[in-house]
Length: 475
Image 1: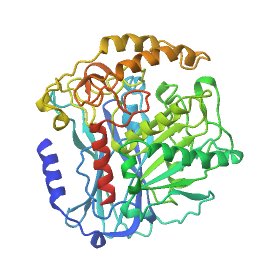
Image 2: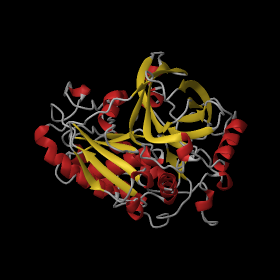
Image 3: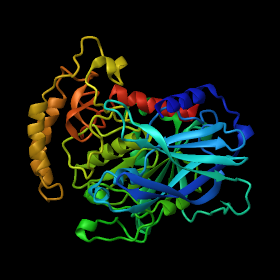
Image 4: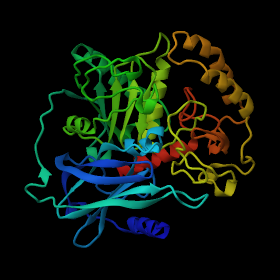
C-alpha cells in the first residue's frame, strides 16, 4: 500500500492536466454519509450538486502535500487518468477517537467534498489513514469507498440555482478566484439586530489573521468575503448549561463533551448557505462569549466573538488565527496540558501526518531537520518541568468560573516567562510536549501560534506548511 501511495504521488507530480479538456468552469459538490464506530466505517453517497464557478486553482489540481486524515481522488472513468485530488479531515474522524466511539456506539455524519465539475463520467474514491502501521511509520491511506458519477445525467445531479437571502460583501479582494485563496466568513448566532456587529467582526478577524506571519506577507494572495447570515436567536447552544438557541448554522459548544469546542453537525445546511459565494475555506464567527472555537483541516474554522470580560479581546484573536492554522495549514495542536476529549488521538509509535508534530527525537529523521542548525541539540532542552508545574495549577482552575481570569493571570505570566527565554527564542529544534501528549511527542519551537495563548507568529516549520498551501491555491 505504501509503495502504491508513493507511486501515486510520483504520477501526480509528472502529470500536467489540461483543465479545459476535463472540466467545466462549475463546481461539483458531493455530499455523503460517513457511518461507523471505533475501527469501523463506511461511506454512502447522498447527493451530487452543480454549484457556481470553481474557485480553486486550475493548474494545481493534484494534491501532493500528504496532509489530512482523509483523501479524495477523482479519475476519468474511461482512461482511469487521475484528474483531481485533495486531502482533508472530518468531524467523523475526530469522533472516532472519543469515548463514545470506543464504547462501540455507531454514528452518522454528513460530509462534503468539492471539485471542479467534470465533463465526462468519473470515479470518485475516498481514502482514510490506516492507523495500524509499523512503529515509526506515518499512516498511509486505504480506500474506503468509490462511486461512479455521470455529470451529464439528467437525474443524478441537482442543478438547482439557489438565491441567497443573505447579503454578501467584500472584506478584501485582491484578484480572480482561481488565482487567490478565497475565504468565506459566515456568522452564526447573529440575530437581525446583531448584523452590524457581524460586519465589524468580519473585518476585525480578517485584520487579525493578516497581522501574523506568514499570512501578513501573503496578504495579496487572499480574497475574503462575508455573508450576513441571520439567526432567529443571538448566541449559540451551550448544552452543559441547558442553553439552546435557534441558529442558522447549528453551531454549539460542548462538542465531544469539551466545553470550549465549537462545531456544527449541520453540514448540509452549511453547504447550502455557502454555495452561492466562491470559497476555498470557510470560517464561522459565533456570536457568543464563552472562550471557544474549532478548526478541522479543509473543513471550517469557528471562533467566539465576544470577550469573556473587558480586556480579553486578545483571546478571541488568538483562537481565530490558531484555529485557521488547523483548517488551512493542516497544523496540529502543539499544546499538551489542556484537557481534550480524544482517546489516543495520536496512536503510540505511529508518526502523525501533521507537519509540526512528531514522535521522532533524532535530528536526521525529523520532518523539519532542514530547519535545524548544526549546534541545536535534539531533543532540545527547555524548562519543561517548571512549565508543567505551572500548567498543572492552571489546568486545575475552572475555566467557566467567574474568578477564572483573576486566578489565571499570575500563572500565565510565569509560564510565558519560560516561553520567552532568549536561549531558545526563535530557535527550531525538537521541544518535548506536543499533540496533547507530555512525553515522547515533540514540536518545532518553544512557542508558536499553535502552542500557547500568546501574540506570536507561526514558527518557521508551521509557516512553511502554510506557505506550501498558499502556493497550491494561487499557482
